[in-house]
Image (tube, rainbow, N blue to C red; front, side, top):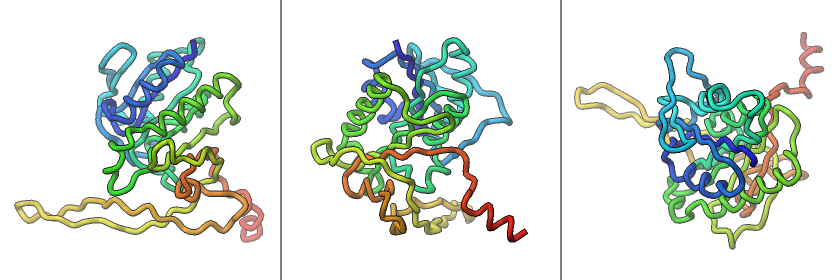
Length: 261
């Protein structure tokens, strides 16, 4: 039986991860290690300044006390698996909210997949795009997301993972029901338009504090019409599947930099 390790950055009891577990249970042996608390936008961070502990929630289901998604994958592979008993795939999600464009660098969801491929395990990050501050997610019930991930994992198990080492699949699901979906679309990561929204507040003693705002999901128009971006695909009601690699070298600029030096 295939072995599937599941994690997320929304916390062990989020509706997204529970929907993912339920959908994939017929496909293999499921192990879940997820953060105790929400760790959205924590990036590819490891906890190095304090100890961490596994807390059993159910059979093969653990929460990692105040751990990050990266901690979850790193320690799960150390404690629950070994070199002869690795998971066949790591799946991170289903995240509540998009992880497209440069948001991948912030994403705890994507970072769990990054850690998996660094450890030699194929990985997928899957996110449910939402609108209206994600008020629509509960109505969608992750139906298109779960149907999509089941199809993709079935194909991987029947054939093979489609990417080489140190690369993972980043999947974003449009905020629609399955009947409205136009299918799958292979995409590249687009360019997010970033504002700088931070709200200032004052506590009862007059001390100032800030909440970083939730920016709108705006993006810059693509300059390359030959390849659809993740933003464009989702906007057109496609499930976006982007191959992501961890090598962030700007190869096209190497010669320019050599000449500059």
